[in-house]
Length: 197
Image (cartoon, rainbow, N blue to C red; front, side):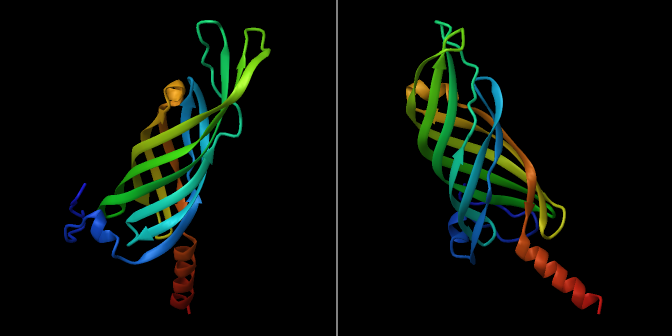
């Protein structure tokens, strides 16, 4: 991942050179659809960070699942229900851009807890506690510029969860959403006002 060719005839660049470019503060939501013990759910996330040259973003965030999820049943018929909460650091790098289409690498690592309850076959709680988790997410995201200030984004990846007893929390994730840039929206409105005069 040291050098990439830009799709619109720019010079070969790499993420380390990007660190020298203009910096901006970024923030937003980082929600992704996933599964925990075969149950579909959403990991909700908030992040803030720094963007370098509008291509590389280094972020810190807080992520979690506020509602209990999980359908895993062990050999004794015990059901484990889970709620995750973890902080994370991550990067996104827009390594390819062809006209309005772009491809981005995604890597995020965190540390936090899984707050769990174990229920027997009759639904009675038999145990509860928390486990240290170290989730690592990696993926590939795709984007398409609908407007200068509005971007369609989708992607997929895999979540690895360290600590042996928490490995069942690993799984895929998918994303689909819109990115709205308020600054560019305001600039676009200002340009339209000047043009219409």
